[in-house]
Length: 419
Image 1 (cartoon, helix red, strand yellow):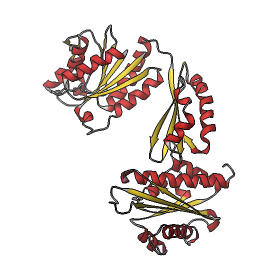
Image 2 (image 1 turned 30 degrees about the horizontal axis):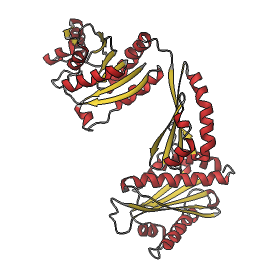
Image 3 (image 1 turned 90 degrees about the vertical axis):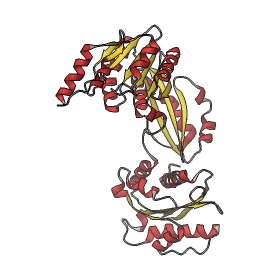
């Protein structure tokens, strides 16, 4: 038993708005154990919409469309569903009465074009939409089921929860759930994760998959079972094996971010953190200052556009442009953050994190990122690391700030004897 989601709307196809509906539907289908194999996006065109619905029925038992149920000329999902299923549209007076009654409750006059919304494919199961004006419908055919939902997220979510999911569970006697556990890693590349887990990536139920982001890689473990408890039992040994192979590169689970993990370890160590950065647009400071618990653990950050400006603010002089000069400069900045007066905590309770990104020599700084220097001032001295970045400068701030926080997290783990 599998499903396909079809998002209908030219604004989605052109990227003018982000398709959050498909993501929400996908997450909800997991709760009833319905496999999702395809997502399709098509513009506001009747023939092309009908074509993708027809193709979806060739490969899916359940086809769920969103969008195109409004009263305007470009809302063509009704016509497309009728064409794809061979069920001509028919007028439902009861649906028109529902629409008229809704407008009256709102104190508004229904426009004549809203009458179009009372047409659904012949013999379709009509679904009232109590939070909007667009009735939804289900077409049951010998090839599969087509379910058409509104494109307005609030309306779609209500109808999906209260009508569609219960219908699917009854109609197909769905008794399973699909559960996913995401392990979050940092400081290790996707290729390294792949090499460590290659044999697990080919397994079935649970399945293991990877998702790479700037500076980190997620490991997703998904299991299908008759209950969440059974799915969790299937996931548990795989999760344990992934953690064994990747070690401390796994910093958290679910939606936990590396900054959340770092602040948690700072709290455990009884330390605070101050940051200084250049070439990152202040992203490191922003990520740390907005994470839960930052009020007492993250003292604050200093942001500058270039290393000399950073040095001027902290009264540290950059002597030259060589690699050794920059390293020495970063070390001095880090210790300055640790020892300067007026910051929360004594020198023995404070860390100073310095992050400097530089463009490649002879290139445009706006489009080509080069070296990154990370220096962590601590009670024992300074830990320094230089990293090269080969990607576009648009991604370097996320990548560099993630690596800076991960380096600090690893230092805290070593300090506590966990690494």
